Amino acid sequence: MNKFIFIVLIMSFLSGCTSLNEVPLNEAALSKYVGEDVIITTHSGEVFEFTVEGATALDIYGDSINVKTTDIKEMEVVDFSPIKTVGLGASIAAFFGVVFAVIVAGS
Image (cartoon, rainbow, N blue to C red; front, side, top):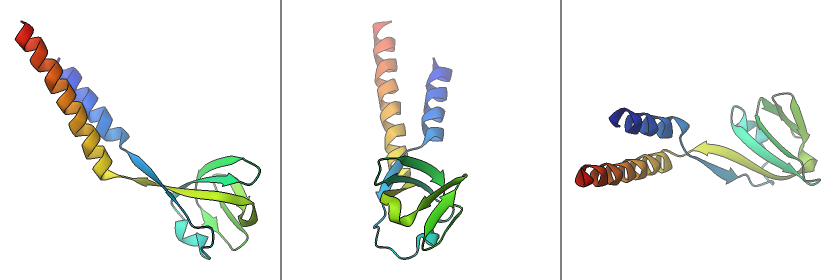
């Protein structure tokens, strides 16, 4: 039982939690997002998720995907959130602590 709890906790920390932060479309320098994971929605409704390898005033590209800046309706940057990860880990630990206490009390 202890190994199971340990494995679940480790998996929750490894998966981590992320947040999506919308990028204002009027920003002139999309090149500052090189190396970031982004989700782009175009005016036609297509959704692209990729790691930015480069950007110019005309397009942004990465992972064999090229999107013209004029086609972008919305762009979000995927950010790792350590606060959410710690909260998730603490919640899971508390849940399994209660389950363990109920099992021990019932024995």
